[in-house]
Image (cartoon, rainbow, N blue to C red):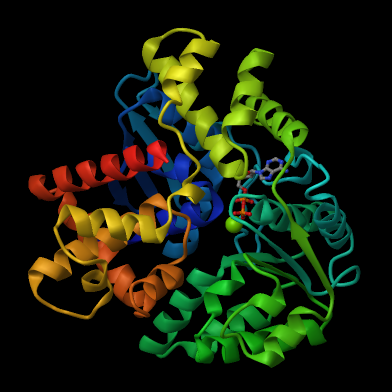
Length: 445
Ligand code: ADP
Ligand code: MG
């Protein structure tokens, strides 16, 4: 029983780190781990659309992750009410036999082929491409930085795919810094630090470390990463890192690490211009096997400007809307459906804190304080949860904005609210109202 939930939790973590939030939230919330015995893992999905989607896009990621966590080959089965086949199996899959030391947890869609090149990302693309063709030799390390949703993770994983395509024997390991930290903490608790180190320092040919800004302020983790970095770099293994800021602007990261980040190549990604956004929309639609009229593409490209992930979110939302209405997408529908759609970068942490404190008739400073009474602690936890879910800020950034707390406090709050909201109707309603208030206010700006 617990096994199943733990395995599934691991899967969610892997999928979350390799997919976009809109998709993750809308799709994975309706997938439930049903049973696990021997080597069969069955998930139940309520919507055929989602079942299909998962079958097409996430089957290998999920199976790989299950097998990795369980330490043996696990087969995934999807069960869905409305589907003709009662259970979809992995029978249609072709590969998967090759034995590797590391199961590469790369998102299969993050390929160079699917990446649209524009002025905003040309340099980053060129550097990434060269690294993928010649890992360890072209640019090492490669450091890619830029705002949220601009394709850093995509490019980084494309390097991994390209490296494997060129040489099947290479071991590519992708990890988010957040996960790296969690694994490290786990390793300390379970006294398996040597094993943890081993897993990163030997048998890795290409190490992809995403969102390295997450190491800010975590001295021991930086130390750990420093040694991992050195061990791999000394052996000429490729290291790629991404971050939301340039190495110089990273706060609370030791100089010796910043210095190493700059050893190879540092490139940035900017927001895409209109033409690039339209091209990205075409590409995404092609991947979903869909086509929109040009006026709809232009409308989308104008509506969502900065964040490619949001563009994707808007397309997914629109497709979902059309499928519920059972009508083809048209411009009117797009306008109606995306009326309230706003780029999450507009919603700031400040903004959420303000809305929550007004709702509960508190001062914002109360939320930022360490006061413990439930009348303050509860709104604070709700606010942290909303910050986590309505913005793209990291746990650390959120913790900072609440008066410089530790990121584990935010993590704890989010887990607690997440767990309780399904049982607690009042909390659920409050969250819905708060979300609506926040969105309404942003739209009035
Ligand atoms: P970041 O890591 O910078 O926050 P991601 O790499 O996760 O952003 O990109 C967010 C989404 O946008 C992904 O689905 C990715 O495929 C897509 N994307 C970003 N840039 C491009 C691009 N230039 N071409 C195609 N898709 C892109
Ligand atoms: Mg990313």
